[in-house]
Amino acid sequence: MDAGSMSSSSKLKSESRWPLRQQLLQEMNSRQNLDRFIPNRSAMDFDFAHFMLTESRKVKKNPAMVSSPSKEAYRKQLAESMNMNRTRILAFKNKPPAPVELFPREFSSLPQDIPAKPRRHIPQTSERTLDAPDLVDDYYLNLLDWGSCNVIAIALANTVYLWDATNGSTSEVATFEDEVGPVTSVSWAPDGRHIAIGLDNSEVQLWDSTANKQLRILRGCHRSRVGSMAWNNHILTTGGMDGCIVNNDVRVRSHIVETYSGHEQEVCGLKWSASGQQLASGGNDNLLHIWDRSVASSNSPTQWLHKLEDHTAAVKALAWCPFQGNLLASGGGGGDRCIKFWNTHTGACLNSVDTGSHVCALLWNKNERELLSSHGFTQNQLTLWKYPSMAKIAELTGHTSRVLYMAQSPDGCTVASAAGDETLRFWNVFGVPEVAKPAPKSNPEPFAHFNRIR
Image 1 (cartoon, rainbow, N blue to C red):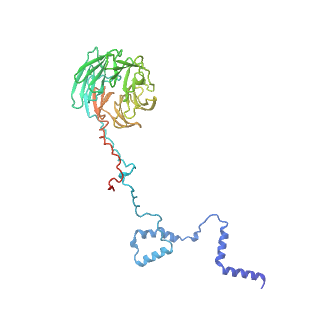
Image 2: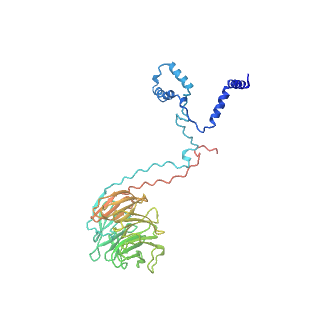
Image 3: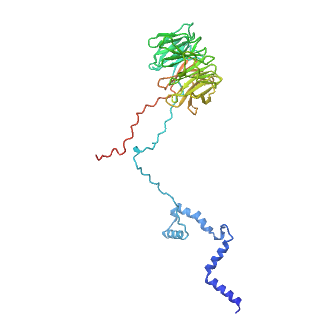
């Protein structure tokens, strides 16, 4: 036998003795040139896959198809042999148990869930309407005020009337001659008993409303009609058509104590801040001034703290924010139509909103972050705004002429509006204030309910 036949026979013997080894070497040699797995269709069982997608689902949905225990046993054995008995991994059949609280809830410092506050209902119509004949339709006057004793004062031509909101009674305070009148402004003193009346002849008269008695006349403050007034304790500030602003101390004979000079035309808006340190004044010259009481001088006219010229029409509507002492809202006339918000410490304009019609009056809600504005043409409406987003909450209509004057009740819930249509309307726009809750007690000592050792 030659060498070639011997080598071939030995090779066949080795392959027959180690078939698995030879197969493994072949697979390793074949994988050296492959970089990815390519499935082989010939190795796939399409019949089994089709059964898994169709028939097995039918069996699960309709167990009645299993007719005998022998078939069920055969199905389980087939599933085990075909590796069909796998279940979902990490599949919760029941909810996980609730966590155990280590400490009682009353001792926890974490904030508790606060229930959502129900939305307040705002009536769209006035709850009461009173006739106001001969109400002067003049944008620059201030003929309506609501005192701290819940009595409304309104000037109709030459007469000042009082309407008691508690019992609905009406009375007359004073009537003036044509040479003196008509009445151009009214303003209650903080005590709710005394009232200041500004007149067309430049006089300011103080009256006792309970006794219907004139107390004194303030002369020499202005050269023409007095269209705006504001109280700051015992100081009565008056603004006239002559552009002058005067502080009057009603306790002394020489009542003029300070003057402010800055407006070139009629002063139609005056409001003191809650602290009594800053005065806002608006005029027909489109100017808004902020005055600081601490730098006022009795010897010479006081210089303004801020001169704000952003409005493009007369500035009559003024309102100090009740929850932020240095925030002032102002409204412009027909050529401006904007509500602007000011930081009175810096003089910066924080926001400006175009309302679409001239702004006659502004009032803040004392209980919520809301602002109410009254308007003229075209809708003659009252608009309630959410602050600071200035989204409209409600629009109240009913007046047929521009709503020139607004006043707020002492509890801050009701608003009275007077318009050129000679009506006085009452709106429950700010709602009933929440009852003050008692102050929460300090947190009890932990485990105080357990018996002490000593």
